[in-house]
Image (cartoon, rainbow, N blue to C red; front, side, top):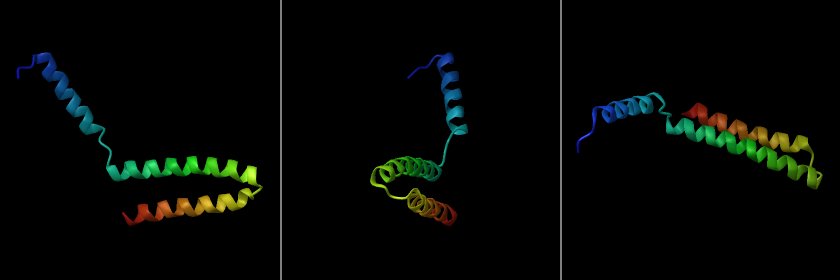
Amino acid sequence: MEHSKKQRISLKNKNFYVAEETIDLEELNRRQSALNVLESWDKQAMHAISSNTSTGHIRERMRAIITGINLIKKEL
């Protein structure tokens, strides 16, 4: 398949850009896990307010979750 010179240049630039911006899948998974933890904290805080659970108890539970993520990160 023939490509014009302009198209070839844009494809080269695209490949260069992709190579520069590549993120390790493990790092992406860690970031997604951290985002899920933060969203979970928000939901649990609202649940704690509605059910009169102490926020300290929720905070300790979230600390344990975050510590688990950090331990997994250290093992890798």
